[in-house]
Amino acid sequence: MRKESIKPYRKAWRMVGLIFPLLYLLTSRGVVLTFSAVVLSIFLILEGVRFKSSTVNDFLFRKASMILKGREKGHITSSTWFVLASFFVALLFERDVAITAWLFTTFGDMAAEVVGIKWGRTKFLGKSLKGSLACLGTCLIVGLACWSLLRLPFAVVLAGALAATVAELLPLPADDNFTMPLLAGAVMALTRNF
Image (tube, rainbow, N blue to C red):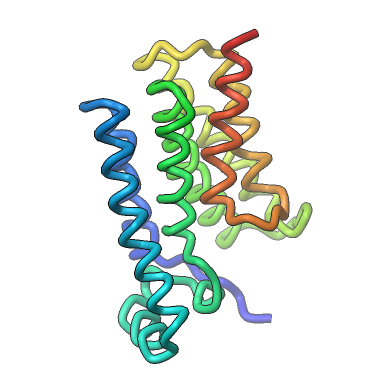
């Protein structure tokens, strides 16, 4: 079995996703929904073209191999899943919950992957236990910043961090870039209402 490696350019590409929380912080839900719908349309068109043409798919994976994973060649990319989730996060959740959910996904999933690849030996549900703990720790740190800056109640932050970690850990059929922000957002929204 080939050992997976950390792709620095993929991690840098991941930071582009910070545009969603930043845009929501500076503008309105309507602007974020419009922006995410446009970006999602572009990504879905690209996905359709590459699935229809193996030449385009091969070209894309040759030219963007530093940000794409080999397993994405025959599947929807993690970036597309994240943009799809971003549209629903903006649609369904209040500003502070949406921003926190995006930050949990951006930083928590990255921490899980980096720590899991570098130091993760013990597997749990097919994932690295250390990677999942790194996800939780990172989400808690991000959550503390959101608690402080966005005035999100700590119980809401804690519930969201746990939900994001569970979504990252569980072997769900959907990509965790889709499930993490939606599950974290839903759990935070529900926790806030109790």
